[in-house]
Image (cartoon, rainbow, N blue to C red; front, side):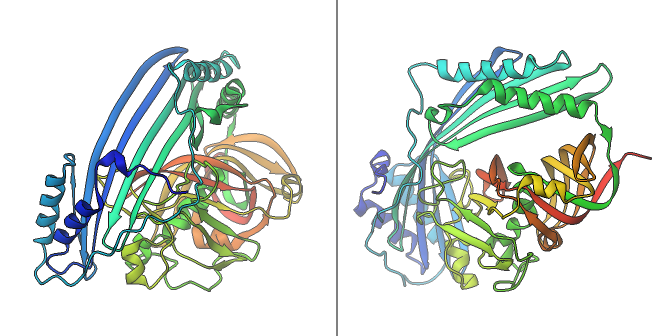
Length: 470
């Protein structure tokens, strides 16, 4: 059953048609209005004391018109019928010509719900404060070397409504909630940070059974462990990238290059590769908005297209790009429910949702035991990627050496350097321990919640940077 929230915005079908007809008056092919009401909340605790509590509200609309592939758009904070109609007329003035496209009769599609938040908040913030205190306790009590602990909870509760000249009339409700913890360890000379997060498109019931003390403890363990680690010695060696946030390699070095924002412009290393081998035959990868209440899941995308499960790579063969309505026509590629935006202030375009490698047939223990010498990248950090070439440089936040098939001493300062297309082809083992990391992806349509994920994988050889041994 479709979510019913358009009443929030006070737009009738007759008014919507009038606005869209005004937008198409000079020959536009497509017109759309996107509206949202969003509440953002943040609670932050420093050293066990509540440091800040902020609430902000966002309300606005975006109008766009497309003619012959050229898009004009505008955003407004005043969402009255008069203002929307005025904006539509102004945008239509960007083109010259006679009306050629009629507004189709609106159809609200029956949508399978993948996101249904409950218990978004109680009468007070007692549950939130309990989680923050628990994570703080778990981190700060681990070691006297933990000198700083910051915990936070963020919530973004959004009602959205989009109607368009192609019959689109869709709504969605989202509530992205995330708990974060960062800790800094120091021995009086050096400092070592570590952080982690847990997020879902769900209400506070997502924390039922969740242990915030253990969550904070694990962050502190990584911080102290890396504080005392030796520096990594660089070289070209096998690299085992652990599950969860290790999937940032797929996200950054591959799937950004599958987004229509790059492919439609011919600025991706994966252009023209549909049906071709782009990875080893054991690699399967998806981008899906359909996982139940997952951090990056949606019921419909920001163009009103119902969420889809997109198989990107099957047995090493490239199967699909991520494509929005405008680029679908340009690329002659099916729409993949991938159009997303941070808010009405940003133009919507093709983006990821939940992106990950599917499980393989090996176990984590088998991968380690079959690696004579290499690097175990337990937790990945940030980096930089060139989508046109796929070349990347990633920091490894938590790492260990693998020696004679066993994980041995911790090492720090390791970086992974290479190309996404090369890494995909060099994956020679994939475990069965799929898990996820919860991030915010920034691109031309703003910052949006996305999942990166994977089972543990082994790359037969990669360039590993490090200043150890110098």
